[in-house]
Amino acid sequence: MARLDSLINQLRYIIGRIGKPTDFFKHIVRNPVKKQILYHCLDVIRDTDRCLETYLETNFNDLDVGGKYIHIYGALQALVMQQDAVKLFARTIEIKYPDDPWLAKIRKYRNQTIGHLPKHGGGKSGALHFIKRDSITAAGFELGTIHVKGKSAAFKTVDISQLIREQRDIFTPVFLRVIHDVRREDM
Image (cartoon, rainbow, N blue to C red; front, side, top):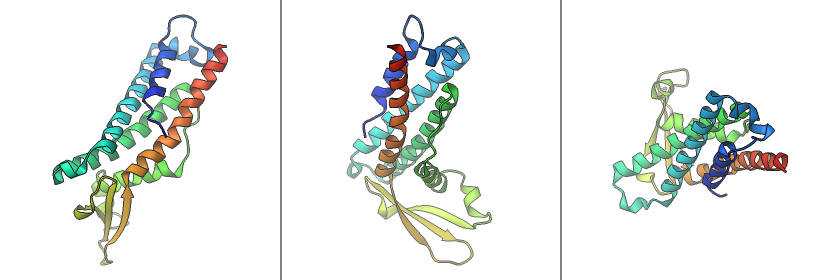
């Protein structure tokens, strides 16, 4: 599915245009705090989408190990930041945030890989997670899990390219629907 960039630019234009605001955005335009929150969300969504596009366009063969890790860490963090911004956007304009298992899976991979390490190490699960260094490719990596209580390591493939596509496929219809509803109301 397409990048979110153009949809976000359309929404910024619709919100900021001079003249009578549509009923859909009237309560936001008249509330400067909500309007700034909405612009901030749209900026974060657009900027993280650009970050994710850069991840997809990067030639991993040109990167050293550190560069590969920073790209993986950055993409996973950008995915979660984008989710948070879309959630705040939806709450601000009072629409339903998509309840999709892919979004939870993305957050789980990010948290296991680079976030909240103490929560995943000595807690109830007793599991430690890591990126298998020799598995890193442009598509993604193998996420290793070691259980502290003596079980052997298990690996699963994390395809970051697929995570990016899935998240875009989930969020694009949200923005298309808002744009459609505003345009329909504006006629």
